[in-house]
Image (cartoon, rainbow, N blue to C red; front, side, top):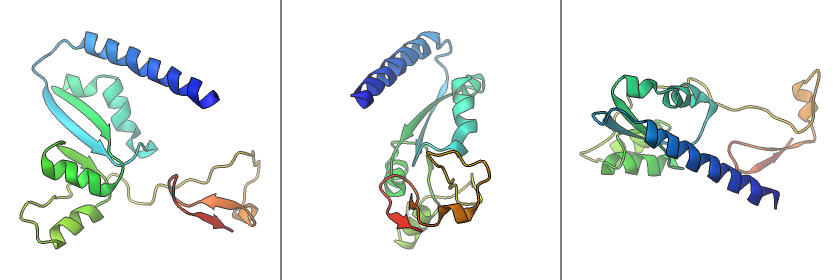
Length: 150
């Protein structure tokens, strides 16, 4: 029940934000740029801030950000022309290139240099050590990935 109420509240906020965003658009000569991202990530925070504060519009861009789960789906969206830019691991570009495709993707920027993983807990640890994880179950990667017993 709690999840349903939260989902409804989130939906209402999105609808209100969309209404205000559409109502506040002044420049119709903006260049449309569609971005597909493989996951919502804290590493994309600068993009979210720039988007919400209108920095893209100031530069003449109307940026649309879409969540497209899976690097293969992001790659397909870019190749089909559904989006202009895809944010995903560079392995997808390598698979397309190695597959002999004439129309292949080009990796032009790296957003992160290391794996973006965090250790989070439901309990507070004032002096956390990795040894505190012994005997615990953790989710490796994103939701849906396998559980690891330590």
